[in-house]
Image (tube, rainbow, N blue to C red; front, side):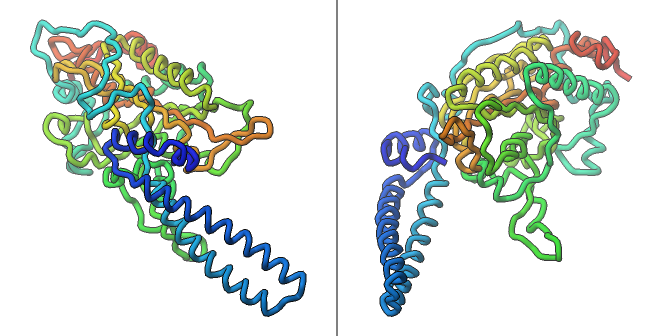
Length: 420
């Protein structure tokens, strides 16, 4: 949520920022309602003063009339507030000034790292390799769960656990606290995170229509499966005021992630590139506003270092405004080379939501006598499925064997995975 004071002082900037995200907002109506709300609030303050005077003077009749007027004006104020809040929640976080303007094709290429590996033999894709090595089974998963699910088996499991352990050991050294979060979050949490505002709720799984409370009562607060670890980590500190000295707070979350992936088709639905369930190690930071850029750069550097350790070729791109998520002010992706597709594919995203999510979740920190909203950062350490794809395809050999990246060998006790 944007600060209403900021909107009052920068209406054209808000209009332009929302437009650059391809989201329509009625800033003029927001300002009109805001003015009406403030005017009516002043009227109510005067009525409260009159009511207090009438009570002191024992003016029963006058007090009765004022009470009726107070009730009427409070109802009007509540109605205006609800309309205003609904419009305020419809405004996306604004792109930072250096974000490229346009749709997904207008991304900025920041750099490339590593040499693209070329094979002297016919390149197999990850699913063919996975089946040859008996580490990926989508056929049996289809019988049990349907399309776009997979069993990860044998050395595939060892590779996943190696990636998780490697990531966690790296991040813990950098001050991150390891967390395994809940996989279910309440509907009101999803709203406050902001990802649902642009209609993206259709990409996530609704688990229940209500939450059962003690005594058999029901609450209209559906539960959703998380789409990424940050969905459960960021709201951990909802309605809390943190201490300035404790910032930044850093979490490394390992969790399953669930997405409908509606609209995906073609190559992306083959194997484990776009599936309904995958595991991920996610970085989340709560920082002071002045530390946002510094910590963002550190987070990106950590993600890059993990990929460099795996010796995988990648490129770094800054997403254009029209490709940003509703709460994101900037997102930088790492795209890793996938030989079977002859192109780079997204494996990591590093984003700042500035104080947008913190305002909606009411997460503040105390600095002297002031209370300020934290800035929230999130970033991928490893999206396990896509990282496995990159390893399998880049490290494959002519006979279908796959060399284990050197940095992972002590975890899996293998130098190479061979066809069964």
